[in-house]
Image 1 (cartoon, rainbow, N blue to C red):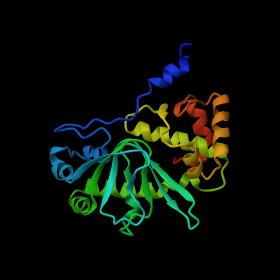
Image 2 (tube, helix red, strand yellow):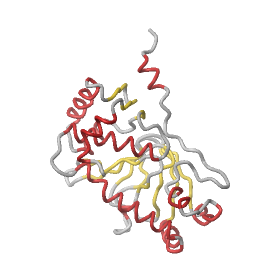
Image 3 (cartoon, helix red, strand yellow):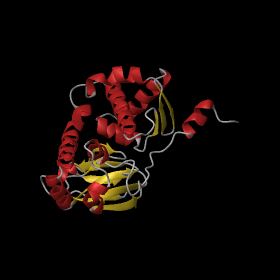
Image 4 (tube, rainbow, N blue to C red):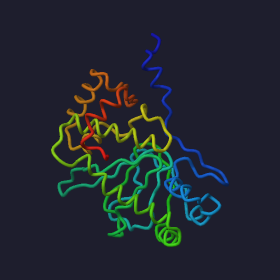
Length: 253
């Protein structure tokens, strides 16, 4: 039987894969390029930044990028792939803290304790730019744009808990989660309305503090309402306006 139109459409959704830039261009998912280019810094002016970057990976699905208690010496900018951060309570129950996509930085919450307070685990084959944080700090002290961007990244990390704050319905949480993913992919030039969910429904449920069965029911309801199309983990957002309205109270203005 030939594939349905939905199947054909979902199969051509591009996966977020970066390019490596060249002598004058940054990698397409560089975590610092937007801030630097905005104030006139190009790759030649940021030779020091480029030299303190180490490309690492791939980390396969399930492999640790770092573990709770490891000494903090570097931050990790996702080049391609995706990551979840997690911790375990005293009873050994996993708590998913967040998900990181291409162009996003993992490990900023370790700056103060100087040890990683959580695990970072690859959700799929994932590559990183690893920045020595002492070297990054020294460079930031001389380049205000880099320093200010670091502060913005830290502030964004602190504000990411908004999806979990307050007493909100499951539909609101899920809608906000999907719109948030869409905006983060769009910010790096990837397709905003169609992407692969690298995280399991169990991970999504854990992060949103919902039961896995609830997540499945909500996604099924969204599909029946024509808000999304979902085949396996290939997701298409069909009515962004309705999803944004539904989850709007949890999204940043």
